[in-house]
Length: 370
Figure 1 (cartoon, helix red, strand yellow):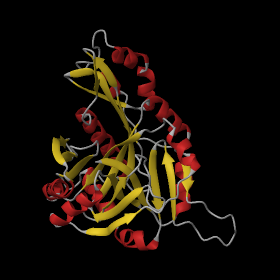
Figure 2: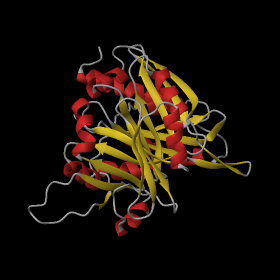
Figure 3: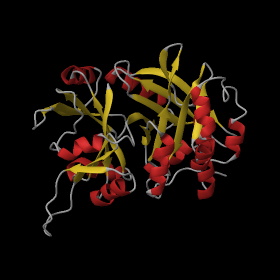
């Protein structure tokens, strides 16, 4: 099971479409709009950020109920499956709700359906017949090939779901029983002020990963998200890039804002075991780009058993004026060890702590964390 695309549920398409095009370097693929002045406001737009499709949706029948309960945000995470019929049968057998039964794509690219996810989320399920990534309801476009050739962003790495206290175990059970995800890492992040618990889910037949968080204190950043979002939902989505320094430089120049990281983080980074691994190219790479990483406020982590492969991450400011949905940029370095290729895994447990503390600092600015 792979991530296919993201659906942003919004009250007006054009401003979001233009922001992703101009600030994120996205390519607007469709649908095409008539230049006639009587043309109604668009109710959806597909924009590729690098190779990741973002479907921006304001179709009343789709988003009205969502926006009655939540601010604009990611209301649907679409997943690509090998056998749609079998997947929907599994969902129904596990007590799930099928919102949209199997539909065949009008352009013969595959079939799709939709199920109710956890809380207000939904999941569009896509089966492709010819190996191409496509989004239901959007006609093929010559611009899609040009969009997908961009190396700015190469894939969706993971999507983080925040749930209220007491719902973590239930949400994990839902995704394991209905969609076949399996539990992996568990995190418990605590500071002197607040905390959270997280369970990472990964699909055994693909790269889709879903960390699920619940708050452990009343003033946790997760609880703040739940309060502003008026319930559970997608806190952030991580977008993978092959060169995070170049990507972040490009996004900053386009006006994208990122969470600040204190400079003492980088002073402490050099003292951590594994920073200077003898004879490996990633350490040389890190030393050469140390100034840029600190200037761009990128977090760095590594597995003690594989310090050659670095995990580099940074996080945007929330998209709205309230602390809800945002994006993460992530690079998982690939290195050769004993003749074999190895890739940085996990989520950067120490980076997770650093992210939590960075968001706490933003909470203190808002006055929501004493």
